[in-house]
Each structure stands twice: as C-alpha cells, then as structure tokens.
Length: 475
RNA sequence: UGAGGCGUAGCGCAGUUGGUAGCGCGUAUGGUUCGGGACCAUAAGGUCGUGGGUUCAAAUCCCGUCGCCUCAACCA
Image: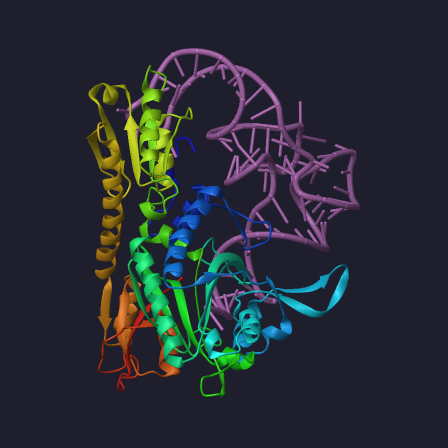
C-alpha cells in the first residue's frame, strides 16, 4: 500500500460506511470472494473469530440443556413443500440439485436454506411419548440462500450458523424456550461481542416464514443503521402438523408438539466489524479476538530485544492470553498499522529503551491510548487491560446507541429521525398499509416492538396506536 | 429483466489522427534502516477477456460473444 495509507484509502467512515465496510473486510484478510458469486472464502483470521463465537455460544447452549447434532445438507423437495408459508417464503432463494450420478433426479433436492423441515421429519420418528419431551437440539452447519445482492458476512449465498430446534409438550414451554434463547443471545452479544442489542417481537411482515411469532435482536451499527443479529421463533404447531410430530400424552391422547427454532450466523462477524470499527480498521473485543495482544519488537536486531519479546510472549501465553510476537522484518510503523487494522485489542511495544527501564509501552486499540507499564507484573497488567477493553467497548457502544434513539409522532419526524442515523420509536396502529407506507417513504422498516411502551397514536394515520415500534433503516 | 459502465502484469490504472506494451503499488535480490505504513540500486513479470472482420500493420476501428460492476427492481 506504500504511501497511500489505509486510512486514506478507506472512505470516511461517517460518509461512506458501506464502502468502508467492504474495504475493511477484504483488506484485513478476513475473506476472499469465492468462485461463485456471493460466496466467500473465510481466511484463518476471520474463521478464528467465528471459532471464538462458536465456543462462547456452545457453552451457553450446553448450560441450558441443549445437545449438538448434525442433519443432512440436502432436503427432498417434498419435505420442503409441506409447510405452505415456509415454502412460499423460501422458494425464491433455494438452490436445487437436479442432477446426480450423471442422471436427472426423479425428485430434486433442496440445498438447505434452514432445517426446520428435516428436523421435523426426524422428530416425527423420534418422538412418541410425553416422556420423550422436550427435545433440545442444536446444529452447527452451513446453509445456502440464493440472494440477489450479497455483502460479505452480512448476506452471503452460503453462510455458517447454528440453528436450534426444540420440541415441547406445551405452548407455554415452547414459548418459554423461545424467550430463554433470545435472552441467551442478548447476554452473549453484550458480554462477548460488546454489542448492546434491543430484543423484541417482530411484526407479521418481518416474521419468519412458517412461524407463529418471531423475536429478534437488533444491533446499531456505527452509521446508525440496524442489523438483525439473531432471531428466535415460536413455531407453534405449524411444523408439527406438517410433519406429523405427535406424542401420546399422560392422558392417553395423541397430541401435536410445539416447536421453536433459533439461530445466529457468521453475520455476527459483520456486526462486530460495523459496530466497533473505526477509520483505522477493525476493533475486536478481547473475548472473541483471535489475537488478544501482539508484541512488536523495536530495533529487533539489537542484542536482547527478541529474547525479551519471546520471554514476555511465553509469560502471557502461560497466563492464558492469546498472544503473538510479530518477528517479521517489516518496519515497526508498518506492523502498528497492520495489527490495528486487524483490530487486536492490545499492542505491546518492546525496544531497547523499555527493556533497560524494565518497562513496556502498551497501546489500547479501543481508546488509542499508549501507556507505559512495568514488565515485572506484565501478565496481570495485560489481563486486567483486556478486561477493561471488553467492558469499555460495551459501554462506549451503549452510549453511542442510546444517544441515537429518538421518538417520532409523525411520518415526517420519523423520516428525519432515520435520515439522521437514529433508531426511531413511534406509535403504530398495527395495519399493514401504514407499515408499508413507512417503508416506502423513509426506507425504514419495523425492527422490533418496544416492550413496555405505549404510544397514543399511529405516526402514519393518527388512529389509536396498538404498539410502539422501533423503526430503522437496516442492512 | 430495464438503463449505464468496465475487461491491458499479482493489485490499481494509463494508453486517439492504427505503427516494437507503459506507470504506480506489490514481488525477488543486495545494501542502509527500524519508537507510527523507510530509502537506494538491480531484476522478474503481459498470447491487451474471447471469436471473427477491415488493414502492409489492431489494445486502438467494425461485428459477434463471454464475464464482471453500478443504479433500478427484487430481497424475512
């Protein structure tokens, strides 16, 4: 990149956010584009973020009684078409295998865009008695949706995700599961990704195809737009009836189960990038950062520098820090920029001056502050700084978001609000016409219902409001 | 699908009256450097997307074709 440095190359974050996003994703070496349009190759650094997300989520799923399993990639079209609303919603974006073994298939196979149907068909075999319930299963998998326009991590043809699929004996229990997992997602987003989220129910228009009710968590990106970062669905008996998932209850009566499903995807990496990134590149919170601290030797050829760096690296590694020492022969300035672009939370600069003084210079990626610390208790210092970065990033994101939530009483105010990059709370009468009108005139959509808030009148038609809704432009 | 644009070195691009293929970055080698994207020297690297036509001669003009991008449209 030479003299045109990264900061100059990427567009001003406030003015041209989407372009900034694309540049950051590609230039930090998170992904390459795949050979098929809309697919991507996730490079090791990007995948390491995903692995950390996986491990944190998996802990939480296990703690709430779920087990992992794996279901097939290919789903017979006949399975797929059993739930009317579901097939209608997904049909336009399903990729279908028509040939195999050199011959045309009698029945085409859908490449899973989501797995409710295959889970449904298996659950109908596995579930016979009330004693078999509940079934709490999660799957880590790839899925494919043939989207017309794509953007790395946010909307790709193929993506990685987890999908939980549970079956219960009662409506209450299935709904409780749906809400519990929404809570798990929220806690994870805030404590691991340092992204504050708003959770709530989605409107009919925005709900999942085949669900009775959909709940989402919405995160605000730095440009004020919203990103749906995860969803949970209460499916009622829709899929149970389509796939004949019945059990014999205590009272001797055959009953349909109630199911839920919930998922988050590699889109979370996109959320991280856009919620925390700045003009220098990524800022990754320590909990999910592939590299939590990087050591940059200064004047590496001087006697004792590399030895000391290695000593510190080993010490930090032993203390459980994901640490790397950059011994490549690029200049220190180059390395500073490179690792900042990759969002590494802490940078430790170690040169002859520091070593002589028994100190190290530590740079915080989130605040851009450089401070001198003693080498004698460096492991404790780094661990406590990592904790501070994690906490401060969430707090900063929360302040940023809260300052950009406004109220609107009219369509005009709503438009002004979203144009200013805000989440806008407004009353809504509940009719589809008003919802469509808002989208047509402001490009904003209903993200979630604002819980516990009661507006007087609809911002569009002025009639009695049924709900208070958070509107925003969304990715 | 409607409209517009672009295919020339790994990447970004320049290349008009048609006449031996260029620049920047990156890469390789050697040297001086190293506390915020260092510098000097040398070198490697291209059937100009593709098929045909016009011409003594085509990256350049003409016709076809393939691919990609932007906007629109579509999009849980």
